[in-house]
Image 1 (cartoon, one colour):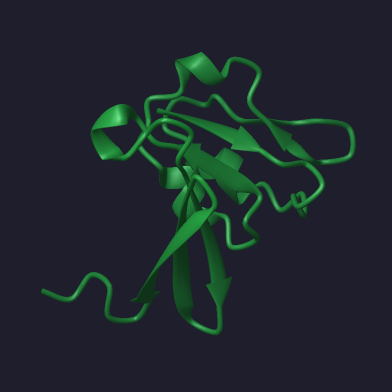
Image 2 (cartoon, helix red, strand yellow):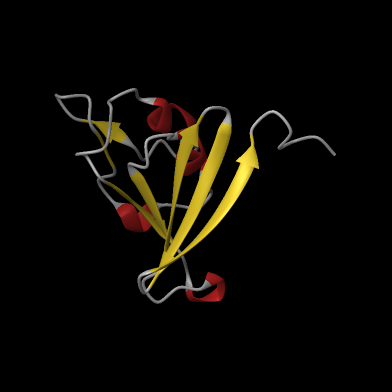
Amino acid sequence: MSIRIDQSLCTGCGLCRDVCPGGLIRQDERKKAFIPEPRDCWGCAACLKECGYGAIRYFLGSDMGGQGAYLVVKDEQGCLHWQINKNGLHTHIRVNKKEANIY
């Protein structure tokens, strides 16, 4: 599993960089996020959960659907919209941020 950052969607907020436990995410001179060595990604998905702009794609391993499947998260009015894309098919999961950690 690894991440890819779409700089055209990146707002330069730096939140993904701040939450990366491995310190793998950097920002360029325009403040756009990038990861110099994607293969070093641990797959924790902290950056994915923090980016509400859909700029980070998390490519899934074969044990999670793999074969080109990826996950994107967008933050819309207090809800996270998780979208899994595989072969042109989309699966959506809606998570209420206020209730996500209540158990």
